[in-house]
Length: 123
Image (cartoon, rainbow, N blue to C red):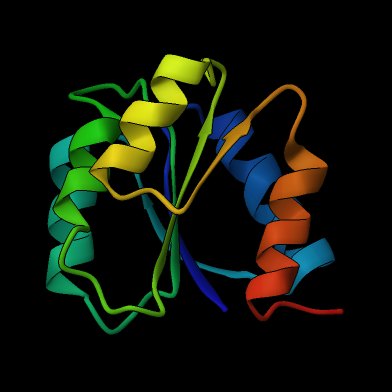
């Protein structure tokens, strides 16, 4: 499974990529630190990703704009939000914009890995 990461914190991004590759069989195909770059890459490379993992607070813009930019994705492509602000209101907003799952960075990493494995990663 191929993942594109939209996360502006290099440490979090590197740890996430390593964890997903090792535990869920997910290969990173690239990353962005901003809304504009992430949304543009995803639209320009529609057939080169299976899942996008999006943080909400970015160097420029918001992960909400990235989620919205994925509205016309293929049915098998998934949008996952990974944030420190997974409040009920934020979760609802993300789902309304088209996210498939929302996970809290501090408490839901195992759930994120399980979700990715369920999508077709390693068993």
